[in-house]
Image 1 (cartoon, rainbow, N blue to C red):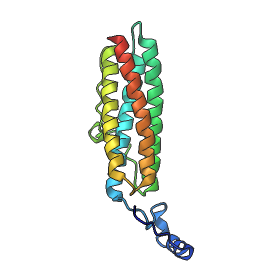
Image 2 (image 1 turned 30 degrees about the vertical axis):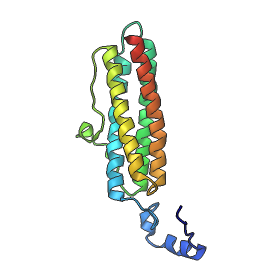
Image 3 (image 1 turned 45 degrees about the vertical axis):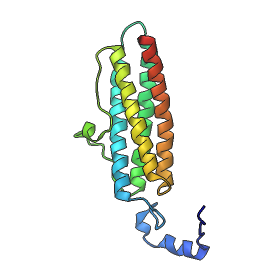
Image 4 (image 1 turned 90 degrees about the vertical axis):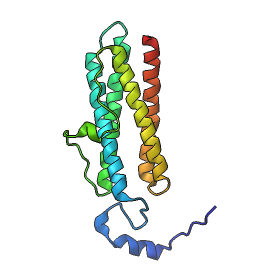
Length: 177
């Protein structure tokens, strides 16, 4: 195990006054900020695409078993939007600009916007998108390691909820089969 060197208070205070314009990004920030901002913006696009897809599914769900699925679609849409908000906030904290431009949104997203025509197709496409998010966020967490613990924690929280979403969609899909 490596030894951690703690900086003396005088040095901490001095460093804090240098480059104040960088806000939360201090000298101790170890990640490649440009890459982290790109990953955050790609993930923001992913969450926005997922929000839109879940919203469509909420309004389009029909059939005998649609009410349970529709409730999940709406809940997931709201949670995906909250994820997008957290990612956008972190982008700003790191001195970047969140990309909400609808032009190219799906191209920036890890997940695709596949509408689905039947309830079963909608649930299937939502499950596929959740699985994409799970794998991409897990890789981002591994990439970040200890270089940006705040961003890593945000992705860990989102990943946990995406895994719940996938489990919900898998259960509904099984009931529809």
